[in-house]
Each structure stands twice: as structure tokens, then as C-alpha cells.
Image (tube, rainbow, N blue to C red; front, side, top):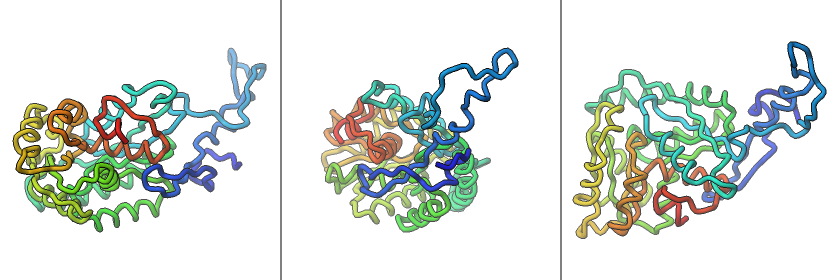
Length: 318
């Protein structure tokens, strides 16, 4: 093994098969840098070199808290929700058979001064976001994650599944890590429930909603009904009251006449896990919130198979 401080400079020595996609996922050896950096010939006691201590670093040392998997999370700088929801899932599912040893390491995508009121504003945000994404990826790699999570509803700013996949394919070509994305995760989750007729709840303005509808139609689903809260200020998305979300779900989406197979919540800055837990048994269909579902996809792809509690039906059942 080549002792370099950058695991991404070396060929990947580990590979797994994605638990959902079936694709080969190559994992960097993020412990290799410790072979040379954590060495008893560098220890110092009272200002003097001290090597009289037992230490076997022949295989390197894992991250003391993220020893099972080190995930890199990419989110807009305005997002105050997604990281919180993912950590809540982790902390609610500890233990040797749970998510103890799974870590989330966040890099912010800089999107300064964004206020989306119309289609032109949305196009400007698209350019700002994509430009900031590459810098955020480089920042994330400094923590040496093994797998990345896209913490953004890309269908908000991109039109259709082809444009979405083109962006992600371009990113994947420039770095060696695999990704969990909402469009892949949502499609996989809907297939688990054999869902066809869906409803959408999102914080977007009309153009963002139209883009989202287009993506799901491209994937082969019938969007029966959609509801957007029209948030122009991306920070405000996190402030949408839970009572309002619940009213929309109960009175405008999960109605007998809509005959939905599933409800999907878009917008990673809009909290939904606890609402899914509260309402799913009442309405009888899954509420697939973007944060929980994208994390579900990342975990299942990386071999974490056990049911997860307090995180919506999907994570318990599949």
C-alpha cells in the first residue's frame, strides 16, 4: 500500500456492490494516512521523543467516531435542516447492529444573496449553485469521506431527468466517489412500494414545482397533485410550520379522490421525518421525505441493511 496522505491519489483497494443499485462502489482507504502520521516514533512526552509504548499501526487506524462509514454531505449554505435530520436518524439507531460508527461530514455550497421570486431568479440560482458545488466538493474531500450525499433537490433548478443525470455524470467523472442523489433515491423508494400515482409537497415557486413534476414524469410516475409553498428566501423554507405541512398533506394530497400510492416531500431544508412518523399510519400511504429517503439510499447502498426506527416507514420496512 502506498503511504500517502491523500487516499484519492491511489487506486481504490476496496469495493462493494450497491445494496439497491447493484453497481460496483469503490471505496477509498481513508485509514492509510495514519500509517505514517500516527507513529510512536513521533510521540512526545514532556517535550522529549517517547516511543516506549505499544502501538500496532500496520493496518492504519479508523476514524474513532466514523469507523463504519464516513459520509460527506453537500448542502446549500442556507440549509439548517438536513444535517439535523440525518444525525437524528443516526442517534435514534445506535448499537453494534445500528448506525453507531456512521458519521456525517458537511460541506456548504455557497449560494450568497439568493432570493427566488421568478423564473429568471431560479436560473441565476442554478448557475450560482453549480459553480459553488465544485468548490464544496473539494472542501468535503479534505475530511476524506468514503461516499457522498447530495443534499439538494436538484429538480428544483434543473429541467427533467436528463439534465439532472448529465450534471451528476459530469461531477462523477471529475472525482472517484459514489453519490446518493434524490432522483435515484426517490425512484428506488417508489419502486419498493410499487407506487405509480404520487403527490408532491415542496417549498418551491411555480417553476420549481413544474421542474419537479417533469422529473417524476420522466421517471414514469403520474403526478396527480402537487403543492408548493412558494418560498423565495431559501432560509425561510426551514420556518414553514409543521401544522401547515400537515394540513396540506391531509386536506389537499392524501384525499380519497386523489387515490395516491405515495406522497413525496421535496426541498432538503423542509423538515419532514417527524411528520412522516406522525401521519403515515393515519393516511395509509408512505410519506417519502427527501432527507430520510436520500439517507436510506446511501445507507442501503453501503451495506447497512437493518431496519431503522423513528425515521418513517421506508427505513423500517426496506
